[in-house]
Length: 299
Image (cartoon, rainbow, N blue to C red; front, side):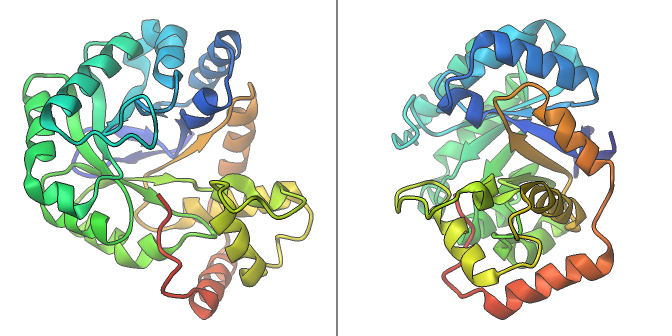
């Protein structure tokens, strides 16, 4: 598994990471998570990303591989309670969240703590950044990051306070490639691509509900009409993942799954390398031809 230097940090991250949302939201069993993460680490995984609001994801990960803590980089996020829609941006709330995450993950430190989709308005108050810096000083995290998109992320980067950026990058979400990645390079940030296969929305055989998390990507793909989204789900997934792998400035991509063996399947795709330049350029040109100003990065 290829590894890339992660911005200004001392980490060399696997280009394919693991995102912990699905195991929480889809109710994965502890046995399945144990099997899945053990095998993935054995196969070269060294980036695991989760959040305090992904139901019991942190507990599942801590129980599964807490005893192998030195073999991987552990990232989590703060800014919510136990409910994804319950934003908690008070300094004391953030501090408690960090301590709670460490306990759940069965560790005394994480490699990266990230503010989870924090708005520019909240960032400007300064308190949330101060709490993260204090956690870093106390040894609870080695680095601090920002997870978010669009103009909120622009502001976050320009504060100069963060070591890493996590943002949406995929065939259906390309705003960050032009808006954020040049800035991330300027500030030498490690870049984590979230939702790198656009939630595999092509697998829906009918239009998702309006409140479905992946609906915006479904709608966009109906207009983008990429020729590789043609009913061949494996080809669609492979092209999507290799597209994000090909984006200059991306260091690691986090793909979620609750099925043992899926990470290794994705690793075999990644091993094929970047897309040929003409395929990558074709996807970018199609985006620029079709995308509207409303097609902003999806939280």
